[in-house]
Image (cartoon, rainbow over all chains, first blue to last red; front, top):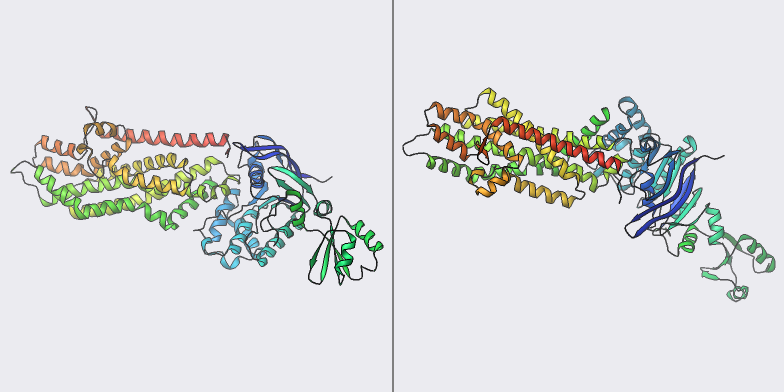
Length: 304
Length: 301
């Protein structure tokens, strides 16, 4: 049986009249890449703050690795690594001084610190700017150091709050490669919130939050099948013939894109109109379509 | 313990690497020096000479020693508090930048975080104020030195105590501030106001009697006075040895706030020390209490 590393039941949080989180219940399994999606104000950061022991909950329970966060946070904190939305490291200090001060919070000092620093600097490629102050680094360089800080004490769960927003594709790729390696080698569980749909599409499980409640959840495939359907792109087809199918379609360059409920319906359509399907391709809907369908809102950065 | 030392080391580095924070802590002492250099020194000299009874002579060395020791005691009294407020700005900056979250998600306790700010603020303020003390003593040496070795030791203790007092008060005040705007407002008020409140810019004896009564309830008044007593003690001994009448020396001591009265009762120097020590214990205890309460209650919003 797969182990639940995070278990949340009937979680509530309000700010005055604003209900930020309402009756939220879900589990995150060990080694999973778990994605939390929602527009700004959906309740993602509030939930993360409560998991990280930063914010008091109004009701419900949060268990992390079998420990109640509100009672045993000192134990839980050793198992969590957190990458915040913005860098929270000291801009005036060098990369090494920053990591030294943060590693000491977990009792990592002296030789153990130097060894772990060398390891992470190599993996995240920041050896060349170890002695440079953080304020002199680019956004991508800073983010690499943020990830190193979160991974320094070898956490079992890594919480990433929009970790790649504003980063160049190369840095995003590097960060994801390192995180993927940690998942494969160390069984790291990753709890992700992101605006990038292609990152969410790689998740093992997704929860879409809307107004503090779960609007949809499942694997990317389940969500796509349920909310986005399939698309058939027909090349060299005449629009008059497409109209006769009586299905929603959009014209794109040199082709027509037809929305179909599921893959079985596509097979049925091909069998019924074989002459029409001479040059075609079938694609699954995208996570953007899922998000739009579920919440009625487009996710900022989602179409990138 | 090693975790606390590392937090203190980080906070000290932040203070000395942040030029804005470091130099803003020196603004008040610099203003005081500029005021002194431009007109305060001559005003003090003239008012002192004019206050002396007719026919009474004062040597240039004694006059300079009196005026300069009055200035440096004011400068040190103000610096100990305003520098500690600036050094403690890091506590607010960390909240404003959300850096505090990086500490609170770690296993370190909130009490250790608080102690880290307190100790680092005290150490960095002590470095600045003891540097200022050395400069002040050297200046006094060139202008008119009348201090004994015991006086110097007392002044060192006074600077230490007033710095701890400043650290304890600033820790309590800054604990509730969360934005840079609030920090700069408090910094401005403290820098501008504390010098007047503690009698550093102008002797309390020149204020109205109502205001004097209010200031008697502020511990900073006693911190400034004990510094003045120890820095100017040699000057008064010299005056007495020159045969100046006791009433005149006593009235000078009244005029420069070496003699402080709680209503009608004169406060002895050892009582001033006790007031400052008591205030340090009180405000430090309050700061610890804030952390105990915050440990029990997580942030609600």
